[in-house]
Image 1 (cartoon, rainbow, N blue to C red):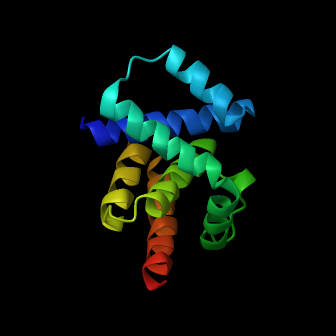
Image 2: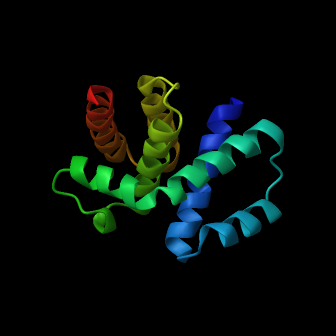
Length: 136
């Protein structure tokens, strides 16, 4: 597994911890890294994705909600919701990363942590978001 993929998975795990545990970002960062052995580039990119995702959470959730037709965020599976949050954070925070790369990475992570139906759902939502961001 590449360093970037590992970072994305770590960011997803931090977002999941914050979401399910109703914990603030700083607490998650401290407790998460106390139990993990990721250093250097993997940790740096994961921390940055988590920072963007939590720092721009209302904006990111609004974007997801707008593009997830007939789905409220609180009704989505927690893994799916946080895969979407991490991917949208990367689309917003790293505009030089090609959107197809961000989407493909999110789908690969969803294949590992979620269901086949979720992969299709995440693909549709992220594709719609990427098209809107590209038009701006």
